[in-house]
Length: 214
Image (cartoon, rainbow, N blue to C red; front, side):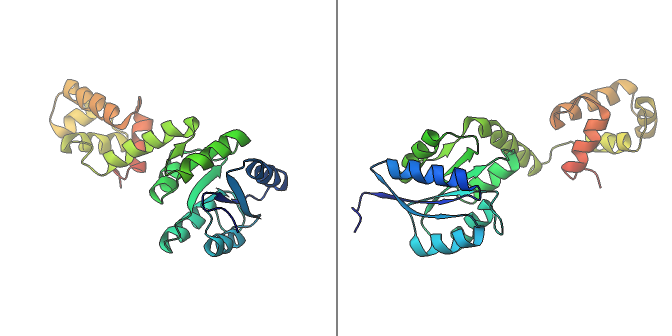
């Protein structure tokens, strides 16, 4: 029977060498207890549900179910295990989704064994750990989503953007909207700043990504 203060840890990763290395690192720490190992997402989900470890280290690249899939299922079923996502993909949207779903930590697959074990200890105490290399992407994604939820461009700026997308030049836009070319340039400058771009093509692409253009 394990001591009540031991931290039980489950490890799911499809790379056998890495998985075994993490397992050995967990077992080397006296405050940890290795609850199990898995190489497949469905197997990992079933065993985490059954064992309810203190912390589950889950590779997002698992076959059959990704780490985020597992996280979503655990949240839905109110399984209290704290989840650390490991991922080679450090993009902002993925980190944001994982955090939104309750991930206690998000680490790069390049994390050292010491960093992984330290993250386990931190999240077991109720903390949250985000690798430095994923933090900026998360902040950028939060800003993007915040802007997407509010009126980003003024009505006139939206008109100018649509006309840019139609291929009109500044004088042509000015003629169509009955404003001066200098006013058009001001609107273009403002919408470039709001969209975080520096040219017309990028503005159109960003406008489409944010669904400002249909």
